[in-house]
Amino acid sequence: SAFYNCSGLTSLTLPDSLTSIGNYAFQYCSGLTSLYAEGDAPAVGSNAFYNVTATLFYKASTSGWTNPWNGLTTAEWTSWPDPM
Image (cartoon, rainbow, N blue to C red):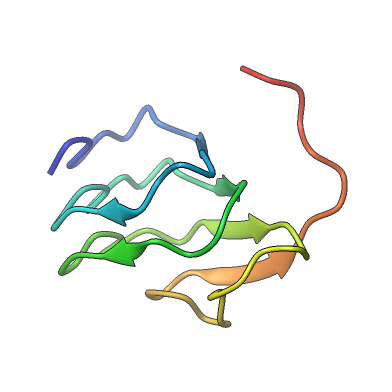
């Protein structure tokens, strides 16, 4: 539940070294609109993205992404945003 109910979080980059996301990690992060995945799909805990309507963008060279993925809409992304 690292970012549980963090409404100020709007965008997030998942590094290619990420292998798992814990239970409830982003639950109720209502401001989260975009996730950018640099690597393969990680294992995901229970309700990690509950009540989140973000789109997850992934690199074509990665694997494990489905649509939807853990309740999130996914799309292939070829133009990466500027680093935060």
